[in-house]
Amino acid sequence: MSQARDVKRRIRSVDNTRQITRTMEMVATSKMKRASDRVYASRPYGNALEDLVGGLHSPELADRFPLLRAPEQTKTAAILLLTANRGLAGAFNANLIRMARDLLADQRDSGVATELHVSGKKGIAYFRFQGAELKQTWNDVGDYPTPDDAGRLVDGLQRRFESGELDAIWVIASEYRSALSTPPTTKQVLPIRSDVEGSSGDRFILSPSGDDILNKLLPLYVRNVVYRALVENAAAEQGARRTAMKNATDNAADMLETLERRYNRARQGQITQEIAEIVGGAAAFD
Image (cartoon, rainbow, N blue to C red):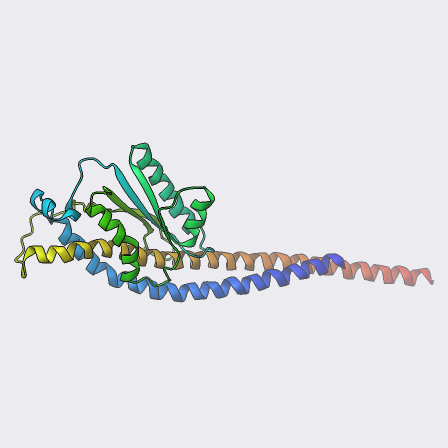
């Protein structure tokens, strides 16, 4: 009797867990739909801006616009790591943290003085637990980031690059490909790379002056790179959480099936034992 009660108690516990994970899966699915719509909406503009800025490299422009400066040797760098504020998303945060740790080690092994800036409670907690020095931290970026959020994260780093205090800025975030594919990626924000195929030969008629346009366009490009990383990362987080909660729900269903079979066997054994006791008791009176 005791064994059957224990199994029944476990069944109730697993069933309650399944209901929670199922609810979380549904919430993540809803948030992922909205976040992925923002990803798809941001890509055409971001790609066009990247193609345009990627073709602007020349020594003359680099002398006039610090954001186009490409130092001969990287001596100082900053890594901006984007993680989530919440867990229960599988290996989502762990993969981002691992990539940041590897990039940080590679840069420092190459003699580059590299500082770490982290957005998201999970990344902050990990590196603080490891005793790493964090230059800046943010834990208030929501599920639907805005360009203003991107500005808060990168504007200060951009000014330091313009002044020559930093030689390179990297951003680490997850790319949203689908709910099942959210790989972590590393992108160099500054200096602006000129490897966009076919862009170097473009010619433009500029009005107003080119200087006025570039003074607005280059900071906009930098902010847009980080904004896209935030939007992709937010959608990837919900996709990873949906996948993790679906797997947890499926595992709970499998466990319930196993427990119910065990409960039925326990009950069958208990009933058989009770019948044998009744038969044995009746036989004693014969």
